[in-house]
Image (cartoon, rainbow over all chains, first blue to last red):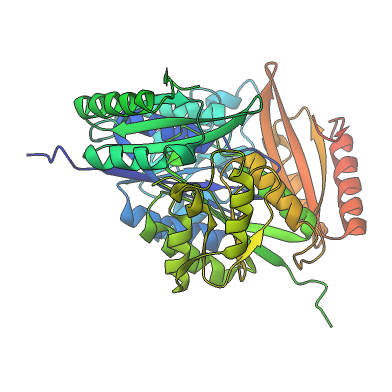
Length: 253
Length: 253
């Protein structure tokens, strides 16, 4: 019988000099994390690495071994700085081959767009043994090899690939979360938060302070895979905060 | 004599369940990367880890050994989920102490804000041997211990801490970058990009495709620490693109 308390985890490797140089604001961490939560899989760790084969190989081999799933984003385009497929094949110790179905997809996509050049054919290359992930936005597909999912760097393309994967990965109970907010300095309620968390097994309380319109506030996010425990913890926290004189804003501020 | 070609590197550890859950969009990677470029230091790798001591200890010890500098963001507030200081002290094998100057800063900051409670005093705790980084936004200071810089999770507070550090870290030549853009599918110019990069030593060309208003385009970012080489590479790339029939937009699209 499957263990209902088993936690399924994923790691993500964001590949790209453009993130490390500060040129591009990453959007894939939040997008993939949110999608994984719904699949009942927890994003356990993320690494951002350069367009550098040894760096990618090291991260792939460590993270795929200690997580149920490994996602990568970036570096699967047609240009010289797109080295993800070669690096992952090297990490797995397999050859890079041209996937016949990917070639057919690209031939069809580029039929009215100037034809399939050598550069474009690069996007049909996969580590030997891989299958494809449908790309609903543009031509080049994503790639699955065992527990590794190789996705695009452009967030809207990755969104389409995630949609194609929805419901196909085994996971556990989705992580549920409820947010409440107060106009309070988190340091005033630190003890109350810690005590409430300790009293509610299977729940975590995160505290996220902010400064807005010259005032100090904090949102408190309660997370659990169990709806009844989550609700009990949120009720207890709400009661404690209001008893302390801080009106609670359901849903956060 | 210092080596003018020496590359100084930094790593960043983003600490926080709120990033891994997808609740919060990280802003510190891009902010710190951009700031490091100006200091002549390259952001070489980033890890996002949970509020979990073994995960933080592992990342700290690997990344501080192989980079000139290590930055962390997040987990230095007053609540039970703020465990960064304890985890870094454990990684370094030193005690956690209350820093007298941090205590004085907090006493003064909270004098008109309800006084220094036990929870607030948590923010004066540092790994033994640390010095402080000025916090120009709120009370609790950042922490420096050797080549480790412990910063806030809230981006505006980290911005003030970076400002306080500006010009104090040894680095090499700042990484310079010039962006040009074309309405072209990057797959059409992949060979041209690779050839131009190979012909210009000390320059890297990054290609960043996008889809906008129903059209395909790409920005090309040329990076180098040498202004003359950078200019020569940008000129050659501009010439090659325009000869190919793709008008170049200086500064990117």
